[in-house]
Amino acid sequence: MIRYQNTKAIASGFLSGLGGLITLPVTLPANIISVLYVQVRMIAAIAYLRGYDLKSDQVKTFVYVALTGNSAAEVLKNTGIKIGQKIMTSYIKNKLPFAVLKKINQKVGFRLVAKTGTKAPIVLTKAVPVIGGVVGGASDGISTYIIAKTAKKLFV
Image (cartoon, rainbow, N blue to C red; front, side):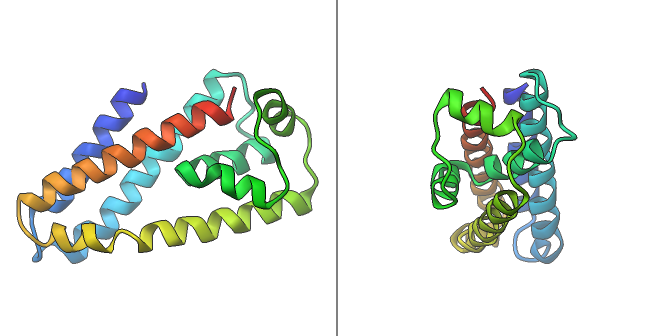
């Protein structure tokens, strides 16, 4: 399932960068939205397959935390949550206070905005036809793979 989702992200990145500078204003937002959609569905599927209730506020919050990829540990550490298999399971399955969930969601929001802002060199490379497709596909594939690894760690 993870490989299949990763392939979808790579295809989206490749196709969005294929047109070059002329199509960039349309394909860049479409690429960001489609890759985020694929990644969120993949994380939710991992959580569901591991027995978590997707309607729970805690699970929804940790789905967004997994979207931050390698920064997930730092986001949770900044909110006072320690990462460990048994500890994470208890945090996700038990009710966390609303204030903690709100704080986590704020940190995740800032990370995701910063994450899209750091893609400037990739966007510049997408301005070159065909090469932009290869770079976009590789970038989206790598980020989706990292997010999948993070989701597997969070949803034990």
